[in-house]
Image (cartoon, rainbow, N blue to C red):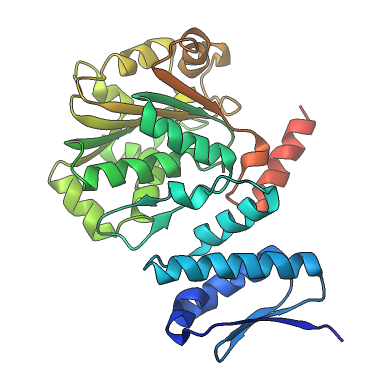
Length: 314
């Protein structure tokens, strides 16, 4: 018979916070430990005789309780971060690097060391390149940090842009006007924002001109001062487009460039502006560079396995 490991909580008011809506937090712990976890009265129980899992469980519940007592609601991001922190034996608390966004109940935590390093670069460099495979959280963290700064009114405007590349489809043959044709290319950027703020809040900020999402071609000839700027999917910029973008950065502005050099859709892959920029700008002290690897993938365990399989089949 499998034994039970029990965490008893004196403050029953914290139980809903620890369990999460519809027990989402407990399900996240279950998924991580691969054993049943449930709440009974003022107890949170783990069904396992494994001492290692019991120690991890106790550590994570204890940390969650501490944050809940401080008024910070635990969520799945925090739980994954706490597990990764405990398993790595890191003395650096990634939860200290969390991002809060005014008007949002979400709190974003770095899930691994490279995500923590990326947040450090966001705070110390005016231009940051985050390069790595899909699922490593590059764009999500960039958008979260940008929204946090914008909502604190540290910058006048958030500008998010992507190059529009016809990856396997011709824009000319797609239905609709230009805006309708371009919209699907920009949709992932809205998805990221709307996972952090409500649809209504994002729409209101966009209508007020505080947020602008546009194709990279629309940046030509502009000077973006007092702005937080994100260039996503930068691997699909040409040399000329990348240079054009980087020279748009005006006074009191910060820029983040994200991309995956394994997913270049340009006809001539060697001509990627991101690849060239990483090569020729890497020694400039004022610019931060961070490369993620497949080991940093946080989107889904299956995504990591898929990318690893493709890497082996090169």
